[in-house]
Image (tube, rainbow over all chains, first blue to last red; front, side):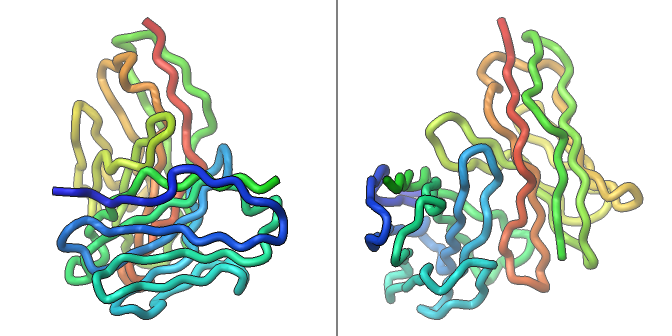
Length: 115
Length: 113
């Protein structure tokens, strides 16, 4: 049973560029959430997708956008990259039918470095 | 809004020592509480959870009890091993806000042999 898979594992970009990160949820899960984890900090919620729509959004600017596909996989797009966007980006999946007390399953993340 | 506060690290212990990592939360509702662990270079793994007051979550020798009266969810283990060295995150989710997780800043645990 494959867990949450993310790609790529590492990425180096320069300021002003755009980046796309990808996530495939755990089998049986229909909800995907994205988190940003800066070095030495806890993950911060970016947004959550269900049925190909953004259901919730954290306190992140519009430069951060996402998409969910019919197979439940998801992309995170970040435009006009800033040095402060350097972080580990984590994808988590869960099942909406078990909302609230259902723990989310995390991928190993994409390490994004901005030069 | 909801928030989680963890004790600052790093926490350095000798093998077989007793571990406590403190976690307190602020929430207006009745959140579910979680401990996640992150090993170097990896994502987060769920360690244990509790969904209502007085519930005790336990896994791999770790345990934590949901204390509503003190808004706490402290992580304990009776005898740590070198392999327990990792970063530990306390988190909550509130059903009124979907199941997004609100994390503490994390506590680094280092266990020496």
